[in-house]
Structure formats: structure tokens, C-alpha cells
Image (cartoon, rainbow, N blue to C red; front, side, top):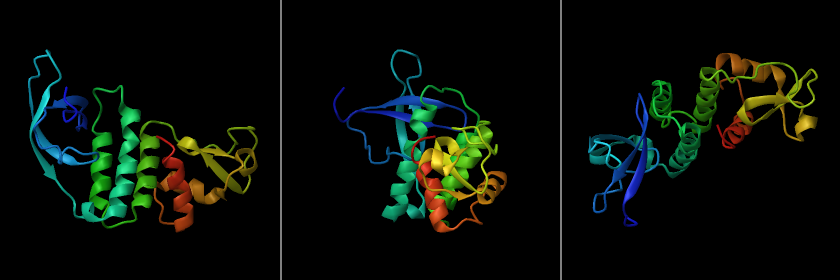
Length: 195
């Protein structure tokens, strides 16, 4: 293949598919995190099916570089998470589409944190226990979080912490309304380590 040819991983409401986009086609539409409408050609199994007739369905916030950068960083986390998946329920597609619709109106870091806790809940990975994952003793007032929002003592992680009650409320409501911006930034940084 020429270097201009593209292999695209596409998330739809029912599956994750890999497609080929041939040299000479306009690739500007085919970028990380874009919502596109498309047709598929050549699903006869001889080679990767080919994307054609792409049209971009844009959002007004795409012209805001800061919002777009956070979006790209968030979307990048889904590729390794869904890499070996073929058929999926519409949850992931609906989650990202819902986030994209709110992205221009709300703080993107808050949307990322709220989307992530929803994803953890959907996958049954919310760790809402009150014991430290590392030393297995009760966490009293301050709690640190590891990747996947796994709770630990701040002294066990050598990390910043949040009040335990605020984290419990966040896990229960899946909303960041009660959190300060620096607390949301802490949760956001954890998400950016990987889904």
C-alpha cells in the first residue's frame, strides 16, 4: 500500500470494524474522533472492506483547539480498550455521541470524568469499596485513586487525594457538579492513564 492509503477503525452502534481507504481519496474527513456517514464496498472477504462516500457530521466545538485536543486524547483511549472487539452493544457509541453533543457547552474534563465513571459502571468495574486496594485497610477521610478509579490511601500511592465523601458521591451520582475544578482535573488525569 502507498503511504497515503489508510486503515481505519470505525466504531458504530453495533460493532467495531476495520476498513481500507484507498489512495487518492480525500482523507481529511477520516480523522481521529470524527463522526462520519459512509458506505462500505467489498465485504466479500477477499480483502478489507473499503470505505467510500464519506461525509463528515461536524460539531461547532471542532474549531476550538483546546476542546478538540481534549476530545482527541479522550477518543484515543478507546482504541486499545476496544481493539479486539467486533460486536458490541450501542453503549460505547451512545456514550461518545452523548459526550460529543455536550462538548461545546460544558467543561470537557467534566464530561470525560462523567463518561468514564459511566463506562466503569457499565462494565461492572466501579470499585466503591472503602478499603485500600494496596494495604487492604479501611480508608478514613482522604482517598487517592489509581487507574480505573481504584481507591487507595494517599500514603500508599504517594499521591494527591480527595475527600472520601466526594468520591463516594461521584461514584453514586456519576456527576461532577459537587466537585471543584482542581478535583475534576485530578480525576481527569487518572482517566488519561487509560481506560
